[in-house]
Image 1 (cartoon, helix red, strand yellow):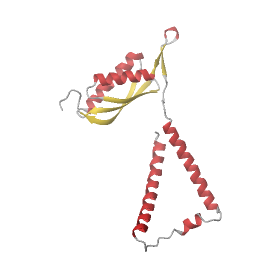
Image 2: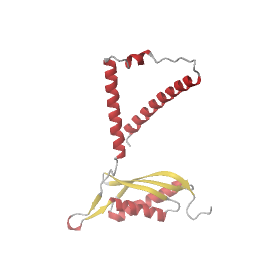
Image 3: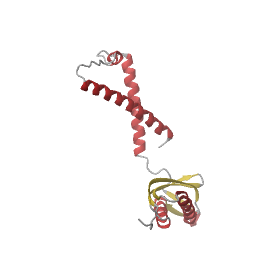
Image 4: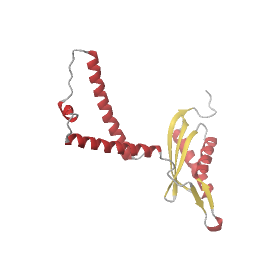
Length: 187
């Protein structure tokens, strides 16, 4: 998710929340006191009046455009699949080979789980950045020594990528989805 779409979603959500809370307070007040009179604002009455007005047409057009933009952003987020290459070409000419990126991701995930006690990877994504590779790992991590575990994982992933095809690790982003005890630790 890009910064712009995240910011736009935050602003739209915040404005929607404010409008919903105001409408809820109005309806709750009207329901609690039957003698209360809370007329609709005159500007709103003019906006939704039976006769068509230029202001209402402009507001409807702006709302329609905003809705279309938000729908496009939502579908882009749903359809955001792999952002990098599906295969990596190693070598050149007759000595070349192709490596499936998904197979490498699975191997890295399994190696991290096997080598780093207490780390339970949930997802791992490789993306190419120029000549190097960036790894994003989401995992349940041991509560003790998070920094040390991350450094060990970075060394492990860098070595695995180098052995797999001379690939260079440019960065490891670790998203901790939960904390737990190290594997083999007493409960």
